Amino acid sequence: MDGVLEALRAAADPTRLRILGLLEFGELTVSELVSILSQSQPRVSRHLKILVDAGLLDRFREGSWVFHRLSLGEKGARARALVALIPPDDPLRGHDAERLKDIQNQRARAAEDYFAKYAPEWDRLRQLDVDEEAVAAAVRDMLPLTKQQKLLDLGTGTGRMLQVLGPDVGEALGLDSSHEMLSVARSNVTQWGLDNCQLRQADILALPLVYGTFDAVVLHQVLHFLDRPWTAIGEAAHALAPGGRLLIVDLGPHDVEELRENHAHRRLGFADEEIQDWLEAQGLKVETIKHLPGTLGVSIWLARRIGVTAFENEHHRMTLGASQ
Ligand SMILES: C[S@@+](CC[C@H](N)C(=O)[O-])C[C@H]1O[C@@H](n2cnc3c(N)ncnc32)[C@H](O)[C@@H]1O
Image 1 (tube, rainbow, N blue to C red):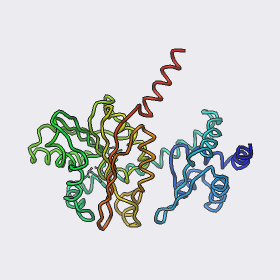
Image 2: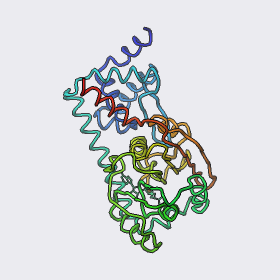
Image 3: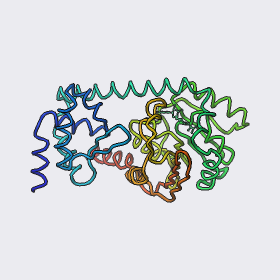
Image 4: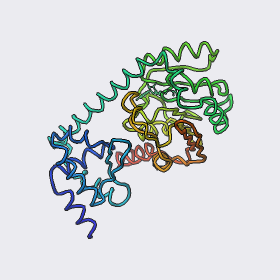
């Protein structure tokens, strides 16, 4: 009972309830919250501290940015239960959701501009901080494929993963939102003689695919650009056939703030635990993790779809609800 009272006391303020409501959509920086709530930074920080002290929020620093998110476990569940009590048509909740969408759209546009600008140079840029051949060898080793299998490359960019894994599979599909990146990928794929590989423009946070059809899905150096990396993992999980494998290649935790300022990175790499939590929440079992040293360390996580994904669970629940 004490825990419930502590949560109620901490949330008993309009701004703090709005903050909980906003963080239900995902992790946000202090300056994003300041901008959405139109309140001074010291004020917002004071509210955040109360919520963190009560265990409703987790706070983590990455370089010069401080993120907050709803905590996991029992205390986070209390925060979610409180947010669920806010009527969906509450005007302030509507206002906050719209402001958040604006901020996310602005960031997505900045990242799109970045990729449009650097598409012709991407094959060269990718090699600057990372030993590409070592990554390719590890990827092939961790994800053996056959000509009977279908591969999906999410955020394919200029098609690097199609080059590395395309020759091993029957069919491969590369998706990307950037028209400019896809143009380079198309000419690369032709040059590599990979006529089993197709490219399509799509948002990997809302896949337009029939679910459960791919034997392997790859997310290579994509997650650190995203606001909601866990959503991309969820979409990847839905795209996998039962028993299919998801391979994520991304940077390990680092403090090269410049990548955020000049290269559209949102997150400064990922710790194993964070990726593992997101994978497990989607019904994927982590099978292997590999760390490759370098100027920026690269981590590779391989997970298998073992059961129903979170999406299928939800869908099943809704279907049951509808038939009652
Ligand atoms: C750093 S590049 C990596 C490309 C490629 N996987 C590689 O390793 O060379 C990230 C790619 O993700 C794409 N991307 C970012 N957000 C996306 C989204 N929501 N939907 C589809 N593609 C996205 C970008 O357009 C960009 O081509």
